[in-house]
Image 1 (cartoon, one colour):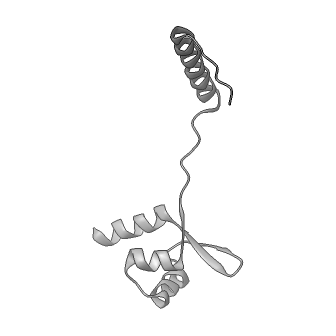
Image 2 (cartoon, rainbow, N blue to C red):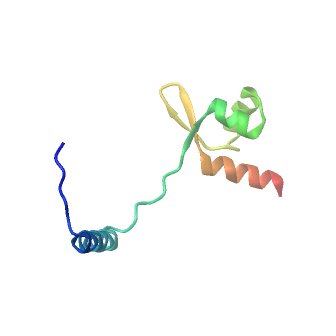
Length: 89
């Protein structure tokens, strides 16, 4: 293993310059949007406290939006939270 010794002031200057660089890049490209977590049938049933059949009815009636990949359904976590909030009001 090779050790490199650097003066504290040089290190702090390097860290500060790197932080400035990151700040400039973020201003140019903006912060990445927060991504939604995707949940499968089992996670949604557990979160909503419903059966798989009830979840199927929600899909059929359009009460809940979903995406299908292959033969498996996925749901945005924000949609599930929205549905829970609507039911609590």
